[in-house]
Length: 267
Image (tube, rainbow, N blue to C red; front, side):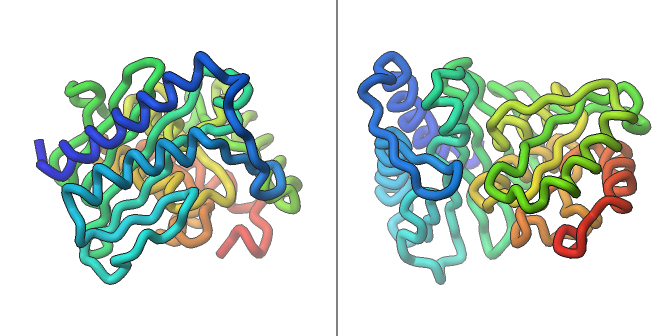
């Protein structure tokens, strides 16, 4: 195992322990609204600090960007960590047991290491660039469907960007007519991990942030899948408009959404 991945796993497990302990005391969790339909808790912040402490101790010169604090400095370093301490905060607040810790490392601008940890199920999804993807140490692969027929697709509703609801609804209806079924779980990181593991055949969402996508993107790619924006390009880290699937299903998804894209989503 790559030594930097090993440290990332240690950091993810440390954050996961904080989150799992808090699950039994949800009435003690302090909740703040940081934007429209967007919440943060003291648990998000404590989990992020636990991750940052471990990363800084091992790699004091590396840059770190976290969902809750933002840039921790050293932004000119060739190594940049991108962390989401609790992806699926709304699920966590409501006691819905589906959320994860997401940690990714970029080296010279390229995704290099990735960890997504589900602390309640004990599932650890990992990837190192060029070395494949694993779930608890066992190799995982995306499914190999020829098209969307029979596919289970995952999505996230545009709850922070409801002005896109018309376009999103048209895309959803188009996909639902062609695939077997759809899921909306509330954690983009786990949706991407599940695509990598072959549990979902594809995933799409509008307006994600880099910390939502980064680890999952590398895990999907290393599992033989593809990740792109809504027009098949590589602008998803900037726009947040993300599609992930096995190659043929991704091709069908991008083709299927094309007629329904607004001018903004087509960028």
